Length: 308
Image (cartoon, rainbow, N blue to C red):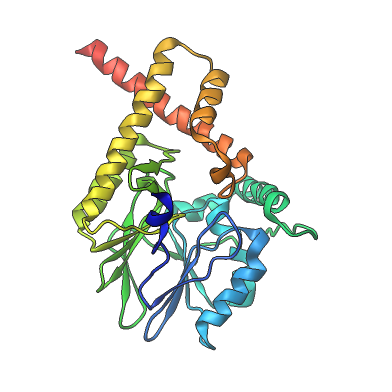
């Protein structure tokens, strides 16, 4: 079933080119009548391959925009190398993304996780940890538009995975490039979620995206969603979020230590397929944040129950 499901996942409209290089992060090039845009940059270790793919896709045109869904290393790692090649390209991201990238500690984390990915997926050589080039040139939020001429992106703030997560909708075709706040599709019945900041924000983001009424969806780290009814995707997200909540709340009620919860979570969700998407160190770092987010939700619900 999975093999048949994956057929067509990269069958994007003709103006959307997959320029991904290496494992772990998808990058898409959108060619408009006047401007071009790269959606996410992937990891630093495969920047050379990404740049080569972009040049082939541009066919001599310039790269005008780099649109960031958020500031995690697997979406932004190659940004400095992109900017070295196309210094006039305007990097678009959330206001909070600019604040994150202004912190030396954030750049250190991006490079540290990028080096782990290099060791796992790289083809030898030496890892170069860039310190410059991680910068937002244009802040975007709800209702903002990025024009490519005959097409344009409408921006939605979709917090939950991070506080800087953005969703972009390519109009007039109604193609929604979703953020990880509303899940990552794996099979028609399965989705992985990574709510690292706020469960309630993630639910609100799903409601916002459903309300937009996009015609087609692109799931991060996956590709074209096969569902004709976009609401089915968000319903699957809400069901999966509820499952994660029940799974973690059960362990919270048992009073299990954090290490035991981490172990059980990894046993349930880590496998060889996921290792092709990210190093286990990055996965476990995310798990720790997920547990903290859901524990806060559990404490909130417990306090509400006491009041009632």
